[in-house]
Length: 144
Image (cartoon, rainbow, N blue to C red; front, side):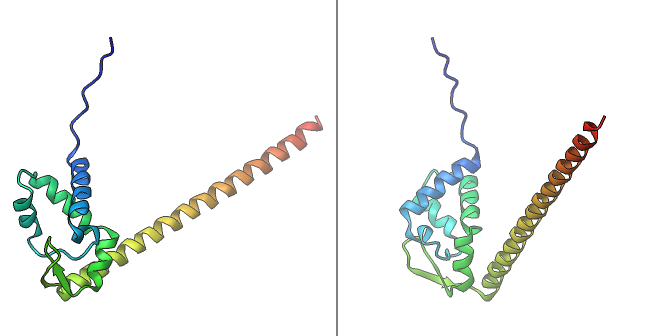
């Protein structure tokens, strides 16, 4: 007799990722990472009744903080509805915010790569030092 544990309920973040995949499959503005119109959440809630607002908010956050979306927003002039029609313009403030967010992200990633390389170099130096110490220890222990 096998005792199958029930699958735990997905976390809001897992549910949000699943919802985002659904949005990308059903709405080209998400798939193409076009700048979304202000209030897109209300459009989505009216089209997808029963959608958990918290999960939707997380899904929208994941999408609007993605590299593709920020790059799109940085250069865009217009925002778009779910059906792909233009709905308002992207303000200079929003374009600048997207550009600054991208700069900060790239800077942070470069710093992380640099720190990783330095840690790898330090580990290699440590390894070489240990090998030299072992060689010296073997050399001097032979003579006794």
